[in-house]
Amino acid sequence: MTTQTPISPPDFAPIRADFPRADRKLWLAAAETHPFSRQHLAAIEAYTSFRALGPGEGRESFTPEMQATTKRRFANLINAAPHEIAFIQSTTDGENIVLAGLDLARRGGNVVIDDLHFEASKYIYTRLAEAGKIELRVVPHRNWQVDLADFARAIDDDTRLVSIALVSQINGYKADAKAISDLAHQHGAYLYCDIIQGAGCTPIDVAAMGIDFCATSTYKWLMGDFGIGFLYVKEALQEVVVKQTRYGLRQVKAMQDYRFESYPDASRYEGTTTMPFLPGVCAHAGLGLIESLGVEAIRAHAKRLTDRLQTELPPLGYEPITPADTPTPIVSFLPQNVAETRAKLDRAFGEQVISFREWYKTDADGRRTKVEGIRLGVSVYNNDADIDAFLQALA
Image (tube, rainbow, N blue to C red; front, side, top):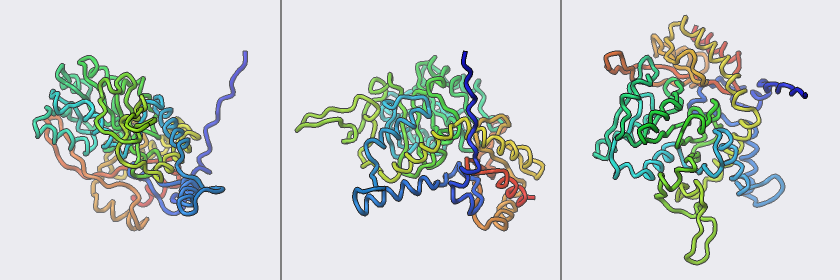
């Protein structure tokens, strides 16, 4: 019997050195945008040199091979197959593709969301409801997390879709996707997940979680840029449940005169715009870095730092609204005095280093109150010195 040697986690000290922004100034806002690495800069230079000078050594476009690798890397990241992945422009673009393919406006019924969802999704369903296309049911949060029993009361046989953020952009709360999926499927509904705050920093298994559709952009934890993202549509639901509703040559495998052969996979959902090559190159680089590190290692690295914030910020007067056991690298707090917090950070760092946000708190009686808070997103380039500097500035 042979024994396997445990794989050592990567050393994150040299990884920090790969991110120039980490040396320049504190950045605890990866949940807003993720900095580029030196690998990104090299990839961008190779592409821009190709665009300026044409082919040659060290110069390349976003080739079909790179596009296929990018899809494969993302598919592996969420335990999907490459043929279940489509390139899209943004997370919201992906959700709109799913809604159009489901033809909710014609079929009616209700859609269930929760109030830890992203604002763009709230906007989509609010407008559909105002137009009389759907009934919108909103599950309120309680203490900044969602009770499964409230979902169970909201979902019924007229529910067509349940739409959630797998990881809330408000406080990093991770929804119990499998339990919510089971509820939806029991009533013949489907589960859509916005995964932009989870993909690349939190383990995701779409099969085990029972996710039918999900979408993300790349400019956050996938370490890419604006303008490109990914849509996952479960293979068994492609065209059978989610119909193709728009047409462009990215969906075409071969053509001869007026005869077109389309790809028999999720490419059918790709849009009518030209593939954004430069953001594609950045996505390829970011996913390559994530693949080399492993999401489990990324998560373990961030957890130690977010645990420090959860322990050391409350004594300074910051009320945590992220559950202590949240398995994501996002932590949020309500300061006693937001203006004072902002002033302290400005004096210490001279520019933005975290995210300031406004949210709505729902009390036990259902009353909603606007609150102001701070959100921190910890990534691969952060270390204890960053946490020390941040805490010292507030103290």
